[in-house]
Length: 205
Image 1: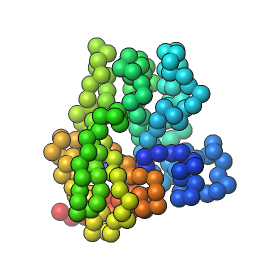
Image 2: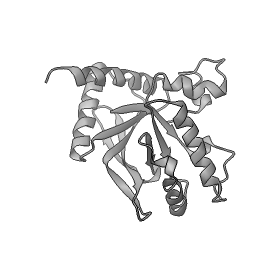
Image 3: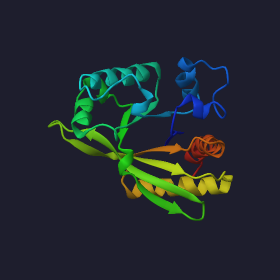
Image 4: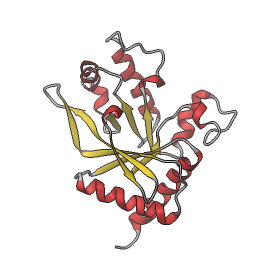
């Protein structure tokens, strides 16, 4: 599993993750020291006007720059604000074929409520492009956004991780990308999930 938070906005993270005096240009580096998944939106690039198709190349360059600055981190980009044509144009740019990119359409997520944990899991497929330019589902990976305000105990968190692992196997996902909400409990849950999942992965069966 690869974990991260569902936004990198400095305003949202200032009180929880980022130091108050952290320059904006250092935010991604600071965040990536702790989390391996960076979820990005079109709104993270306000100077790019996608109504001009030429700017899709500029968007790709921005994603490539972030990717080049980070080693072994996954960039998860939401394409829900792009048209199908723009998505296809983006996917067909050679630099975007890097293994550390992932694309998701957040408008197509399917929700599942877990009453015992007071959490909602929003599942979605990652996207890729075929040789003929069609946008397809990447069946080897999947995405789950965890929504909820409850701080999970170690027992509850272990139960959540085991459930995520089971669901991933059912979906034949070799790799699962997981995000938590940007609030104090969500950040704590994400940090603890990273630690606990790593301990579970090395524990004897």
